[in-house]
Amino acid sequence: VPQTLEALQQQLTASATQRCHFSQQKRVAGLAAPLVSQGQLIFNRQLGLWWQQEQPFAMTLLLDEQRLLQQVADQPPERITASSNPPLFEFSHLLLSLFGADRAALERAFLLTFTPGKQSWQLTLEPRQAPLDRIFRQLALSGRQGVEQLRILDRQGDETLLDFTDCRYQPEELTDVERHRFAR
Image (cartoon, rainbow, N blue to C red; front, side, top):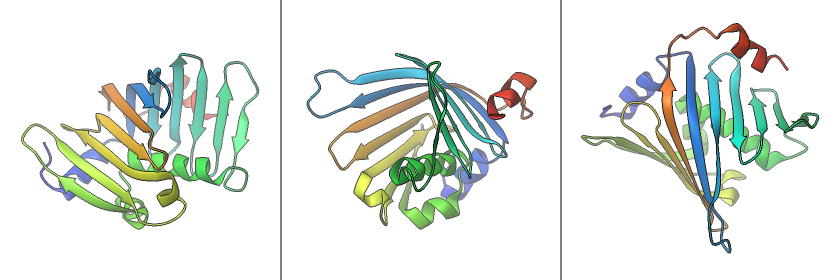
């Protein structure tokens, strides 16, 4: 288990590719039960993040430094830009910084607090500036080696909990099928 933020960053950036399953629970004020979704993701340091929600409905997000594409089921993909939806575009780039362990980008946007432990570590992020400080109260990442959980508290009182399981870092090279997923 990493005992310093530097050791955590080295560990999280050791591999160019990460593949995981995810499950997400979003607790929304006024709803009795959380909204639950699950799927899989691929993060590649060069190509970005491919996020495939499989339940309760199919939705694919593809993001890199220049674009965010969202496709729901068999609908045409929607291109989201910084001008068309600033909060969503900002959040998508936050995800790239989180998965890429881009400490400089994270420190520009957040106050970071690293807490080591014997069994796991935690990294708490508190927004420093707009627009993130108008959206989020706090983000908390935790895990043993890699990121196993992300907890997001927003300004509306909602909470999102993402669990990442079955994470694989090898092979670092994408398969032809995986590379095709990024080629949209």
